[in-house]
Image (tube, rainbow, N blue to C red; front, side, top):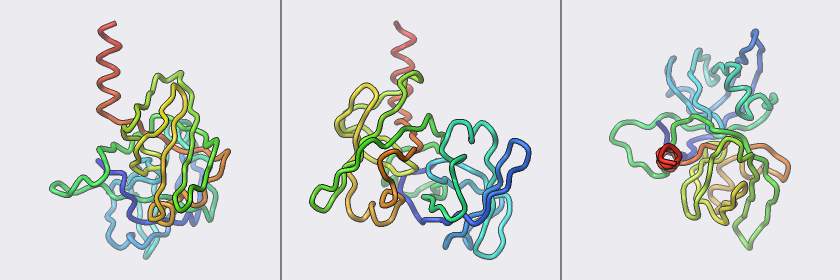
Length: 196
């Protein structure tokens, strides 16, 4: 389980295709604290550390992950949001995040607002995911609050700290992001759908 509070920005050092899998080498300042088999969220995608070498580590994304997230779009030199799984007893500073991306969305608008930024995203409603006003959403692994919730669109407000310490500073209109919708909201919606 994760919280959506980004710990570090990792750099993609190498990408190696292996049949339907993609081995991703990441350089990060937290590598020295990692262990083999540990879970790390990469732009919100939970991946397992399979090897460690000095300040670099490798994770493997399978076809399912590549098909449903923006991990398949990574290039050498790209920056990714990183978060290690939370420890039992830690504060839950963001919200409950599983690291299981529900779908991707496209950034359709970025507006600078006198020291903060508004990002608007459009997503396919065919998967029946929904947002609610002031509810939680995870965008590329970052725990955020939904504003201007619509059927297939929502916005988030980004403060300067988040802008500086995540990949939001590099996100432009037309970019694809990973979305994980609020787990409690997903269960409530599922129960409601079953009752109808």
